[in-house]
Image 1 (cartoon, rainbow, N blue to C red):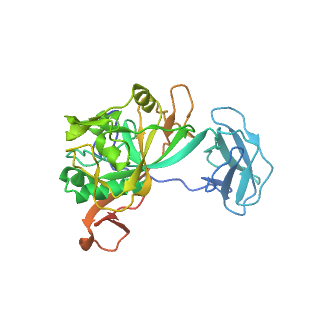
Image 2: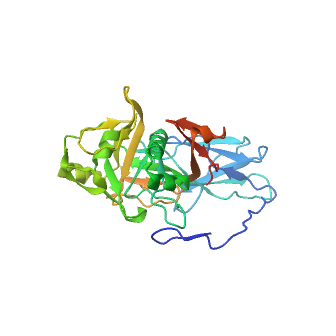
Image 3: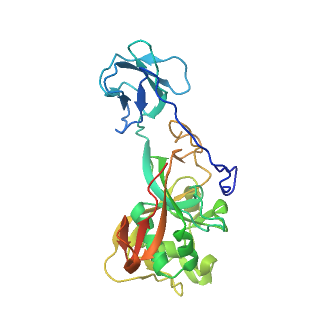
Length: 341
């Protein structure tokens, strides 16, 4: 067990042995959905498969349950629901003794909200080891776009990044956002991952995305030894209000900031790999059970409360075994720990 109120996680302080209790006789078990909800329905599965039951539901936080017709199939669909609404569902056995399942939270789809899977790799790890990086004032990306980044940092000999990635935690997030145009991507950096700030898209990130570098000044060297780039006040304001996005291409950019001209690790036409995203802290919605209240005043994006983590090690290709792996650009990323909640 470990905890945090602010700042980085503590070291594990307790080992807990946890057990779930067995089902009571005749008690239904309501499973999480495997079929995505629509704007008006959710699909559920109930065990045991031969149990007759009714579904009861209510809007999360309200009182009083609405009961459906009896069901004797393991899979059932509950319809005529409102869009973008969180519901509590439970199954009630039809036979005596009457038993209820544990309630489960479901949320119907909202046409004004979209979900994106993003990946974040922990950076600037302290001596106590890498911990999960959250998303506020951080950059994240599609899986292949971030894999290309890790691979090329390793190939560049940038040992501070390679050392971090050899013990890093890569986190998969489900992010919900208001369905609207993306802002310009902002580069987020800082002294440690709890104190990042997001600024005008820097020169190197612009090269990665094949974006305009004419707004950068090679005679004005800023942080990280890069030419300083200028963004309009309108662009910066919108990047602080909604998620920013930029494309990522292969081959990857080389770090040669002597001029604003971008150089690349090899020739050939660019190949689109996915996107990088910037996530401003100010408009983040608080994660809540059953869904994220995206769209409230001052709130434009939020992460679901559950994440998945994977630990990775970097090996050169000739030293890598044939375990679960992806070979990119002379480096191989090997999963050493399977996905877990």
